[in-house]
Image (tube, rainbow, N blue to C red):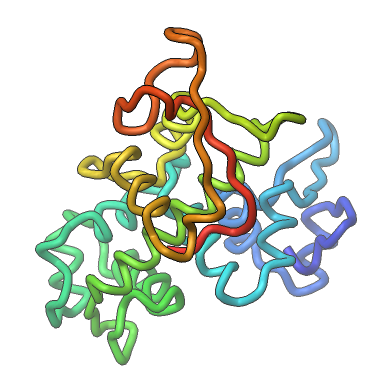
Length: 233
């Protein structure tokens, strides 16, 4: 991504600048790069790639967490399955055991998975074969990922009024891949809204009955939401 920058470069140029084919493919799978052109294929940053490249270290980790959680239809969803599996958290495992628990096809994939988790700070293992997934760090990163996607979708959908239907945000977040099977959008948003640090940043307004769908927690008068400032969680 740093090699491509704001240019559109072909594969050979990227390789000559030190980029590997594996890193190029991974950046494309995660949606940070896109291919353009028919005869000669060039690669350029996507909007997601630009945001990732410009982010500070903490935000970059959150963005990578979000990208790894989403279904990319190519990489197996080992990462999502791992962070969703509470039975694998707060336990000392090696990557061989991890591979068996997740029905992975090879040890190499388990090593890479643990390296991602170590980089993101959710695995406290001391080596690439030592896994210790911290439930607290997983919980923190999941909330940070939820807040990031929530605010990005709000900014995308909000017009001059600054109001977005809660039902629309609910649908977008449920479709984003960041939520897990047991997660509830309304419960998560209610937790964020009720946090002391966010109370002045989020307001709700009513909408005509049946116009924009169900309000937060099914409450009448909370069908439209306005978010001002960065939410914490």
